[in-house]
Image 1 (cartoon, rainbow, N blue to C red):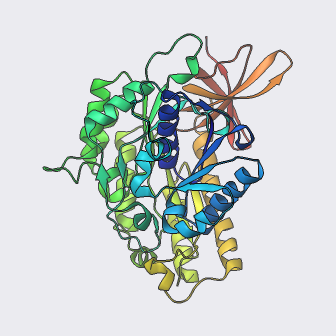
Image 2 (tube, helix red, strand yellow):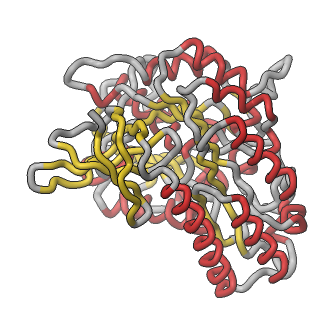
Image 3 (tube, rainbow, N blue to C red):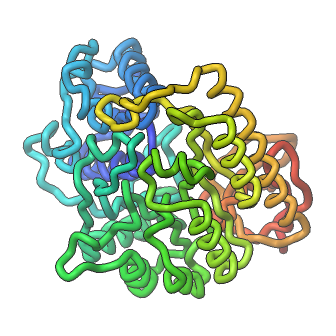
Length: 429
C-alpha cells in the first residue's frame, strides 16, 4: 500500500508523522510524495489558530480531490471537531489525540512489529533533522490556548523510550539509504519544559538532556519551544556541551504586563528580560526566538506600544507573529473588547518589522565568521554549481554554491554576506 503523510502545525505533529513513517514501512508499506499516488493519506491536523484549522480542512479536501481512496485524520482539529472531520468527503478514519500513538495499529490491526530505523518522509516533509516526541499534553492555563483541551494533561515519555527512538534515528544505514540517518535531533513536546514533572519522584528536563548527551552519539541536539518559567540558571550550564544547539525558542506572547496577566501567562517582562540576560551570559551567540500574539482582547494602544518597545529591547534573533483568533472553549474567547481585524493586521505588521530588524542585526553579526552548517535542501543548479541551503546550530539559514550535493552533511562555512533575510558563504577547506 502507498501512503502519503502530511501535517499542519507544530514540530510535535512532525515528530508524530515521522513515527508513523517508521511503523508503516516496518509493516511493509511504501511512502509516497503526494496524495495522488497514495492508497491512504494520513493527515495530522492543527487548530492552534483559525488559520491552522482552515489549513487542516483544506488539506483533507485537497487529498480527496487528488483521488486518495482513503483518508485518515488525527490531531488537534479533528479531536475537537470529530463530526466535522467525519463529514468531509473521503475521510474514512478519525483518530483522536488520545489514540494517535496507536494510529497505525488502528488502521492496520495486524500491525505488531516495532520500527527499527528512521524512515525519511518523501516530498515536502523530508528532513535532515529527526523530531523526537518526548512529552505530550499541558497543565498550563493560558487563556488563549486550545491545545490543552485537545491534547489533555501533561505526560512524559520514559528516558529509555526516548533514547531508543534517538538511537534508531541515528542508526547507520546501508549505502543506498544515506538519507535515513539523522545528523540532528530535535526534542519536541506540547510543554517540553514540563518533561518528568509527572514522574514519581519528579524529574527535570535537564536530566533527560544529560542522558541523551551521555548515551547517544547525536552530533547536534536541538530543543523546541520552552516556556520561560521552566528554566533557571543551572539549566543553561548544559550548553557547556557543544553538541547542544545554541538556539532557544522562548514564547513571550506579549511585552505588556497587563496583557500577559489576561493571557494567564506565568511570567512578566521583567522576569523574561532577566532570563534572556542569563541565557546570553552562559551561551555565547545564542539565538533566542519567540512567539508574539497581537490584538489580544482588550489590548489598548498603550499596551501594544509597551509590548512593541519591550520586544525591540530584547533583540530577538527572529520570531513568529500571530493575530489573535478566538478558539472555542478557551477563556479568552469570552473576554470583552475584541480588537478589529484591520487593527490586528496593522499591529502585526509593526511587530514583524521590529522582529525582522533585530533578526537582520543578529545575522549581520555573523558575517565574517566560520560556522558549521547542516545542509538540508538543494535549491537550484546554476551552471556547474549546486546551490545548497542549511542551518547552523544557532538556527541561521546559510546558502552556498558547491560542485557536488552535500545533503545531510555538515560543513564549515565562511559567512560572506547577508541578503534577503539569509546568509551566503563559501565552504572552508
